[in-house]
View 1 (cartoon, helix red, strand yellow):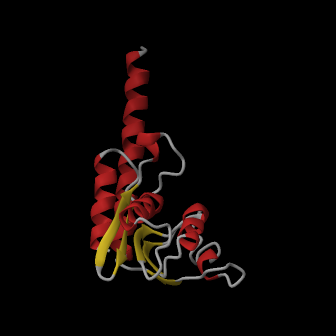
View 2 (cartoon, one colour):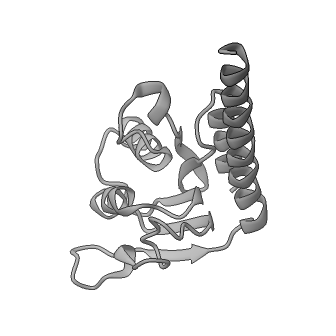
Length: 157
C-alpha cells in the first residue's frame, strides 16, 4: 500500500486527485498508476486503469490471474469492471468512497456471484493516511479557488 500511496503523491504533485494504485504478482510490482484525468482530459485514466494497463503490458497478457491490486481509494464501477475483466485475484484499498465505491460501500461488484469472476476484497489498509491525502488535497483546492475568486473580484474593481 505504501507504493500505492507513493503513486498518489505523484498525482498530487501534478495537480491530480491523489489516488494511486499498484498491481503485484508473486510479490513483485508489475504495474503502477496514478490519476491522470485532468492531465489527459480523459475520463478513463483512473489510477487503477493505468496500473492494470501497465501490468497487462508488462505481462504481455490481459489476464492478470493471481495478481493483487493495491489502491488508495475504493474502486469505482469502471475500475471494478476492469479489475474483474483482467482476472485480478485480490483488491486491497485504503479509503472508502461514499460517492462511487463499488467494492463494498455503494455496492460490491467485485464479489457479485453473477459475474464470471470474483475477487477477494480487503478494505481499510492505511485508511486514515489515504483518506488524509484526499482531504488535504480537496481542502487546498477549495482554498485556492476561493483565493482566485477573491483576487478576480478585487482586480475588477
